[in-house]
Image 1 (cartoon, rainbow, N blue to C red):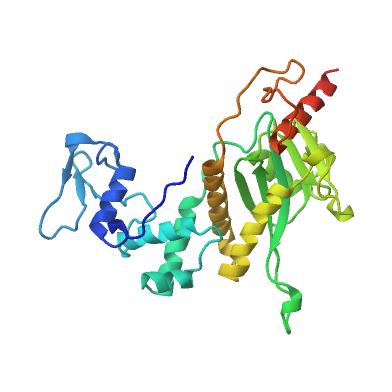
Image 2: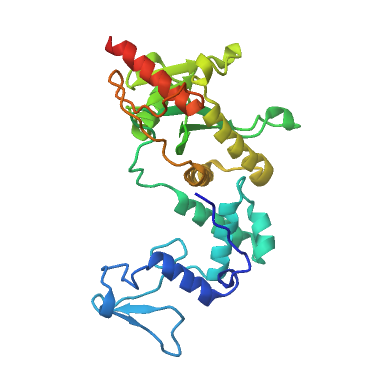
Length: 328
């Protein structure tokens, strides 16, 4: 799917009325509806008095006024709508994010307003419901931990900086989910893994974070031994390079843009990183691989009539081979 380009000269990035109309097309595709009682159609009246601010409607059922920003992170904000849209566009298009200082220089606002904008947008990027688990049958989920924080050698005096542990699950050619955890122990990580990842997945980790008992709860469990300089084995199937690539983007944002991340707001920075990674993954995925039949031994779709060549084909071939051994 080709990525649509956005022209920053669009009127919605400099005119509040155009920005409001753009939000209406996105949030109200079938027309205005009351965010409180849900009515629509002729039960909604647009207020057009001289003293009424633009874009205000009134519900005839609950008799409450509302606008397109009610129920969103833009509600009750005095920042112009056009700057909200421009900040959202700049934030979403920056692969390694953008600092609030850079945003306030570009928008002409105060640093506090830019910081407020970014954190509200990060809160909106948070997947609160988490309805769909990561992975699934025939899919590989990689899990690994990393640490966010400064280095002791960079301080001239004082105690070493605190390191904050981040645990991430990434489905190969799929989505990612990150959590800030208090400690990296099997008990703590198990709660994150079993609540975010489907147990029908093949779990891939390094040798340090997950014990064998947790691995047996999944369809399969593979490891690589990083302490012994082992990063890839079995022809490229066993590795955690996908989740390591996610951490590379996250740390480039921290070191190059934010420079410092407070533990109180770390979950919002992780939500931004997950949102960008997941959105990019949906945009660059190729068309579904054709299914030429179903393996009787494993039940997996046979996606190629030839020898597996791509990493995805190798992974599926390995899963089919492992399932055939278990069925014998």
